[in-house]
Length: 96
Image (tube, rainbow, N blue to C red; front, side, top):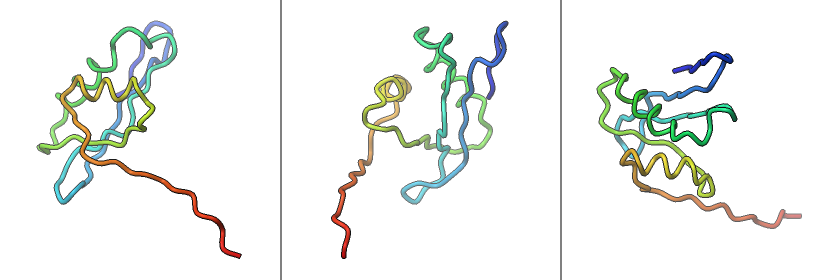
């Protein structure tokens, strides 16, 4: 879903049908708003509209959100999404 306003491109919402943990779901790939659109509480409204317009018949919505991406985490929580998995990366010394 691409968003436009009187000034042109304003943002987008994107997802794809993909599986997670053994079940089919809609993976939220991106929700992007241009700088002029941010701070207006549009993200939850846009994501909800995007999800409502899906005709995929999946019951699960999922996506990867970085732990420090607080605006995206807040939007996901507002829409009823809950954390189910965490990943940790640990640096290992290079073998000689």
